[in-house]
Length: 187
View 1 (cartoon, helix red, strand yellow):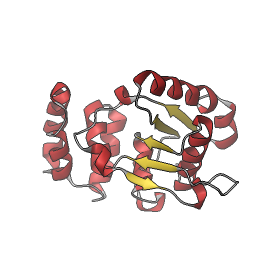
View 2 (cartoon, rainbow, N blue to C red; view 1 turned 45 degrees about the vertical axis):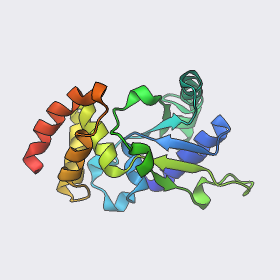
View 3 (tube, rainbow, N blue to C red; view 1 turned 120 degrees about the vertical axis):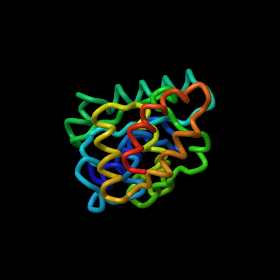
View 4 (cartoon, rainbow, N blue to C red; view 1 turned 120 degrees about the horizontal axis):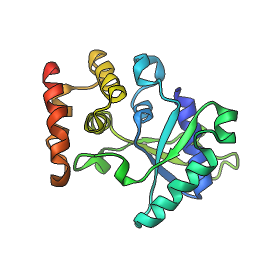
């Protein structure tokens, strides 16, 4: 995936939801910190953008995530037209360290603005170390490959990822154990 595709996904998500801002929590959030030319191939392989709608109500967030999925998800006309899909997600999708909202990386520019030019939509992307911590909590092969590629390219710090893993909410702390054991090879 390319940065311009991420920006398109942000714009489309905001328009579909009628909101000014969304949160990007999946692997493509790395494009908030780096352009695709700076990233290893394993970091941009996914053609799906995980979008978390912003709401104060869990039921509303889930309904908006379902709307995104139905309009722009996998096998949709949106995916057929643009070559990537938007996956609407809720907060239960990712395991995130304490303070993650304070470290979001904003993507807001002319490419995220609708054609009326009156508004610029914002995609708040997970900060790169929070993203890696979240990926390691999932601990799937594709997530480990993603984090390995970023570590080997010196685009993230193993020490900072370990710190974030140690700052998971108490009810999620057990997810950090295998991730920290794996991360030891980079410390």
